[in-house]
Length: 208
Picture (spheres, helix red, strand yellow):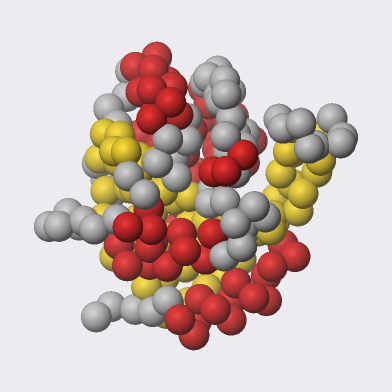
């Protein structure tokens, strides 16, 4: 599938109707989601025929992208049942098969399931300090091949240092710099839209 086609399909998905600030729910736009998954597959071969998990999947945009790129299976995890309802409808609309699981990522225990690749747009940690690192820690315990994750560019040095020191990471590499258009979703937002610089990271776990 071509990048433009993938972005077009993702652009038709429903997003949060009632975003919850405590979960830092912001939609992952089709521009970022398509490039993230397209790069993971075309540069590294980490999506097609692989078991892909989407941590904090929200309305399922990254999950859908993985399914459209012919992942062997896709599982989306999120704490919010409303988001998972929307994600399920999106998967049905695209006619792709995705399993969705309601759970707290920080308490996730997968018994007997081998996950190749984790993709995620985690909370940036602006409402709950350290939330982004909690997601990364959980992902590194699960992924056998790679973790793809979005983090604010301003946290780059901190992310790399913590990942290599604390999370059993063999390599941590920024593979792409992107602009995240943050729409005005919450009352405390002053501006209509904010443009945030984000890094797309690829983390490779050490083989135990």
